[in-house]
Image (cartoon, rainbow, N blue to C red; front, side, top):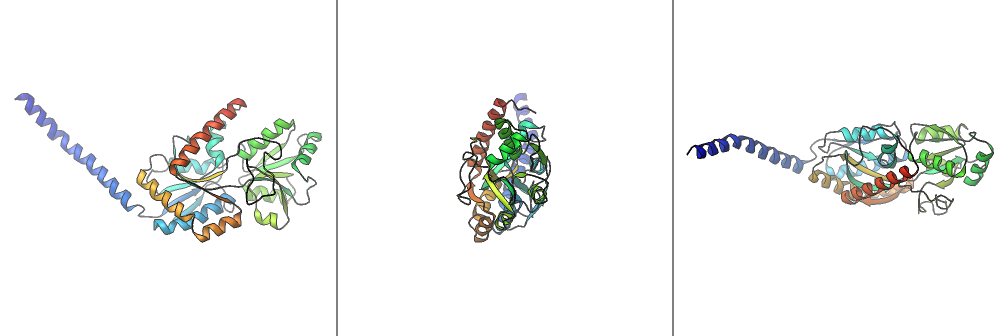
Length: 327
């Protein structure tokens, strides 16, 4: 009898807790079903006016139609684009703070610097919408007609060739330094906060070349010249322009532009965001804008993007270990 009484007592004591937990679960289901109920903040870790910023604004504007709420784009550049990504990772996993992520902040900098986030543990892939196009660019009146010309000059003039990128340890910076090591030359790297800044420095004659984001309008106006594209395969948007492999460097260079949120996002919210941004990719205004930016549309859903991020993270972990590059 005593045992039965204790069992009933335990049941009645635990009942409120069980009901509370069940209530929380139901409340979360309701919140997911109604999501989004207020504006969404979309963090962009690159400066305003850069290719990544413009592409993010294009897709965010179209995704608003399918989410029924405004998407406010907020630029948080700096730290080779890791400041903004850290803000995404540290945000509450409720779907109201998401953002754009870049290759270097996912696959490179975690192995080179101490960061406040881990790309696999702290970020939730939502979808990929394009591949960025980065390149090595000179002023149109530059004496260097090819990258081989530039390397030949650097070989005879150690440290005299200056180049700009979006930051120390950014993927363009590490790639160019790896090429310099392979060629046995010494270049002088000048880090900037983003593409707009180093492009102005190039036009002002303060740099011999830039590596990273570039302004299409400057190319078309004949003010700058593209020596080659930082990519593994030829780009349909630039069919005649060589890529890394064409100029003699078999180097991996992923250039995804992805939407991510903090780890812990409910599956229902991930699916809603993935669906909305995927539908945005089919909107005529988005397609037109991306063509003007000369960016390739590439879609990966949340699962495929997650698999890609895990695989590519492993590739760079091995690559940097083999190169004996450490924090």
